[in-house]
Image (cartoon, rainbow over all chains, first blue to last red; front, top):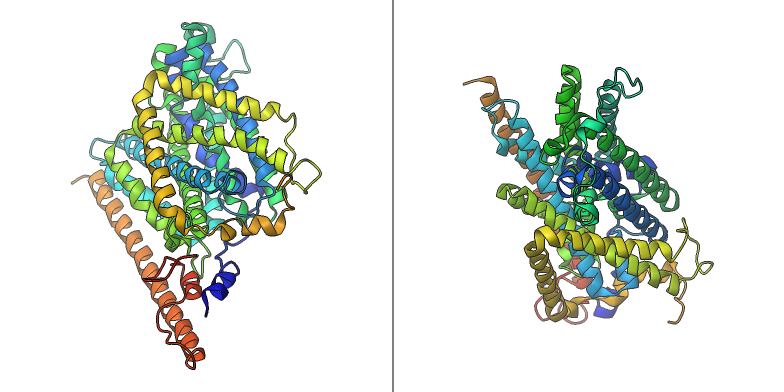
Length: 464
Length: 77
């Protein structure tokens, strides 16, 4: 077969994933990844900005993520491929930016997966000193990798169940405090909170921990290719997921701030679990212990799904070696991508450096958000409203994209106060990766294959 | 040896079991893929027997195989 004929045949033989997901699965993917942030991490915002600073950071960062979900849903609803923000970048920004966005997504989720497994091990260790964390860290990663290997439908159905159970435990804690009965309520907001001790600068410093309430919700777009109806599943799943998280975050802050003194809350490893301990009700403590474990499992599971889809898409588009683009003949999963990323997550899990791992994950995510804001401007310029059918139209453009960029920059500035070395190291890493791509990999990129799906489905962009 | 020490061992054993399950399926799939790829290449060779020699994997079979890396002396598309 001649090379021309082979390359012409290649796009038709491009591997594709199975379309089996509905809005419920998209909700489970998005909320499942994020919910762990309500069980831990967010409370460091209390140490940086005080109790009031933490809730302000929560709502402001909630605005950032609402804008992000709107932007992602509008662009994602017309992209019929796996890869989420990566797939958007390849059509709107070109191969180099797409490579970087893909790499950022992979690291965001692989790091988060490693952190989740680490937390599961540490949490189980609190049950008995004889428990070793390592076998449980490995077991968690192996189990969810196996689940992902076997099929996305079962994976996200399991994620729906464990995410819903974890979310219910937050409500169990809320109702156990009898918040609705002022004379019997266990909540003592006035005595326990410390207002805004560091003023405006404290709020900005708290932004990076407010991100924990929502980090990963953008992962819903990564499963676009596997949705039965992208135009329905993606907007419904993502926006209902965002509303779920806003409600969950506010309840979490309210309950924790009313039960745990702010000085202790700002340093707690498991704030919701500590709040449960403060109720002195054994069944609430047991429920929140289970909730914390389940949220970590849901997050690890969703992270494996998302990171493998990003890696698979990059490989299929020839941005990285093509070996990872293979689809399992029976389960229709990107099995090589799933297995390749497992040891990487394990290596980061072995380091035990939870805060470093999480910081790199958040940093990578923030860079993606910045590029998403920019992509929204390009998308509306290239494909104005009316030029193509969208599953969802983000309201108030360009305000949404401006808000997204501004808040992402403010959060990066907040991160700089505490983790400037990590920020510089992160920039250096992506610079070196870009250098490798531009001077080594770029010559292998087949541009026609890269944008083939969009070229078939989309009209010619304005000005091209 | 208490209950939790035994559970540590159970966790290791389950991890090992899952690893073997994945490995077994992975090897099975890769072997099948390679065999299919060879069969396609052989068919291509038979079709081109009249013309130039053709024994290296083609770009098309590499795509089917999911290993579309440049073969020696072949420019990748």
